[in-house]
Picture 1 (cartoon, rainbow, N blue to C red):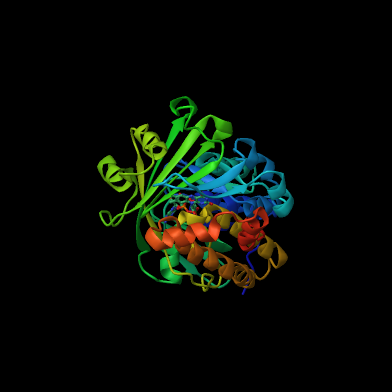
Picture 2: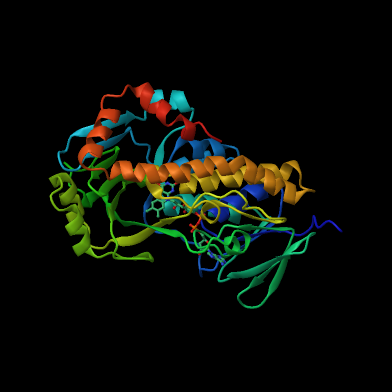
Length: 392
Ligand SMILES: Cc1cc2nc3c(=O)[nH]c(=O)nc-3n(C[C@H](O)[C@H](O)[C@H](O)COP(=O)(O)OP(=O)(O)OC[C@H]3O[C@@H](n4cnc5c(N)ncnc54)[C@H](O)[C@@H]3O)c2cc1C
């Protein structure tokens, strides 16, 4: 069979994962064509936490400084009891954290991380970005792939990377595990201007208020100009949906009786956006011939470890390195990428569910949480996260 080194890599999806993949491949010298179904490249107005592992990964493609430019580096992470106000645990993120992990912990606006990858792609003439183009289907011809777009055009490439998110079509064909699992947890998100946050409620840290079947997180964004709020609760009202407007009635019902610091911040919000949180069981056979998956398409996870975008970025760097090592054997490179990634991403998928239970504990489980976390030495807290933050 004739090799096809002149054809571009095809990427389905222009979210954080797709753009990161396109950028990482182009930085290794490979041409890429990326198809995004939406009319423009855009991320939603909300915050995102970035563990040290993402910085270790993207340092390898030269984007760490860009990602930190508009980010906020909080001095600490804090968990408080949403009913009593008591501190459950606090983890310092300053010098000792930097020394231990060699990388910072930061928070940023989703549009900012997406924008870093988008700018890097737009500034690289090996990447072609195409909007309003939905990937409907693909065929692996053995020596090349082709994708069918929604306008009927067939496009050929040397390989296909499915970065089309939790409802991935490409995954449907490779793994075929049906619809994602609806967790029964809902997230309401909002971003306030700094001036709209009362001074006595503004905190430089990432603060998580843990309540029965709820939690509430807040932190500053964009070098402190904005304030991000995320309220999560258990609900059986919605089965599916993405970025629709939330219903404040239900929110108030779920957070009734919680600390005034929580309720006063919730009161500041006029419009919430709502996410129905979904994930999937971990799998490993996500590469088949010249087609592979990346990011949420490969391993969608609940957000309780704040790692979905971090894992997608790690995937992108790993994939580009495997491809660059054996460009003449893409099916082999994709398998080696999958082999290196699936246990790590599977562990995050599973542990994210466990953390969700932990945050939402009540009664004896909440007491046990307090006993396990309160008064831990700094080093103990760091070591408990080392499996995740030392990675990549
Ligand atoms: C409430 C919440 C909080 C989170 N917090 C964090 C956090 O703090 N830290 C963190 O690291 N992660 C976090 N995440 C996870 C993170 O947002 C996701 O894991 C990450 O955005 C996934 O990126 P992706 O590119 O794989 O998928 P997506 O962002 O879903 O992008 C997929 C893209 O593909 C496009 N597409 C889909 N189908 C097609 C098609 N057929 N053809 C062409 N284009 C297509 C879509 O339009 C979309 O642009 C959070 C998630 C949620 C819901």
